[in-house]
Image (tube, rainbow, N blue to C red; front, side, top):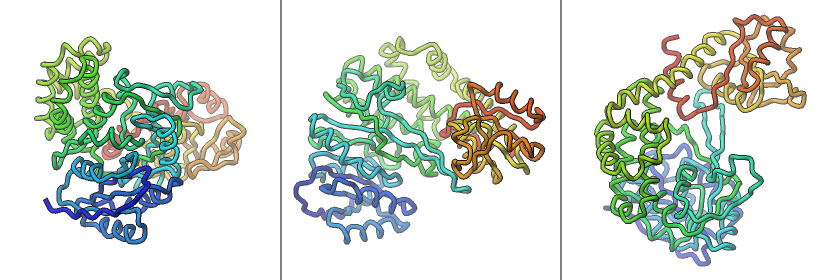
Length: 466
């Protein structure tokens, strides 16, 4: 395997940043700048490029020439796992960060995480992830946040928490990223990524290894990482996705068998969850992914053999889906088609009502921001405004749409289609509009929780038949 291994000698490195790349020219500048401009200066950046052909490598070399902290390594092995392992093996910092080059990080991510790690001598420290969904057509952006620890979602006044991950393995259902943390170098170098070429999701096995072997870690309630979800080449949308889950299992099979029954149960439960996610995506487009057929058969065999380890951990809904998977996976697909068809029908109704009209989104909160993103980015509606019962929002502009008082919009009521964006008070808001003289045919309630991972797939086919 041809490689260029010329690493710069640096001293006093606190964090080594490993960054694998392959044809990410569109994103690499933003990613590199976010790392180089960190408030923590004593870092090294190890870029491992798999012979990009779109100009990515040339950009990396320019950064290397202008900043001594940047080392560029090239390899002809097109494997995310191999690139990560190579970069990790060359890291000389006390801690290691793993950054995907189509993403970017917050300016103080490394300093915040390093200070926590150094003060408490933990195996790793992680923060929150901002998921970024971009509409390539409109330029609109929608964001939501994933927290790596469940209590952060529940509104508790907790800014950070120290846990022993190996003793609470269920945390793998909350802590689903590797890129949002830094890891003690001696801890991480004992582990290896799956190096299969052409595979994806090569962080699943590594994630399980880090969680199941960590004695002490810290999770902080601060967003540190920006994860670009709508990269069209993302593994999350690969039709061979189930096969990749199997590949990760094969890679850590021996390691897994050495773990406690509780840890093994957690892994197989996670495998079921990820397989269901793939079927949910199939359900969103109402199409069986034949490319994953082999992987589905292999997962069945594995789960059947290990069933006694996890079957009692499944709740009633999970058990129904598990039985579908094990007996007739087309019934599992039908289950998810039914779920996604409800969203499909709602989006179709909104689309038909809003075409060629001005649109007023009634409710400028979470639901309103999301449907505004959908209307602009996927339904090609340009003339959109908000109205809201919260007087403090009136006069502001949110994601390109101005917020008006409802009374002002009602003065021109005949020119608008109204999308009520609220789950809890939707019916009360509809009564407001009806009392204000709006016809029911002009109103639709959007009350489905934002779910952009699946909605991107649903919206890719919704309007072909409208």
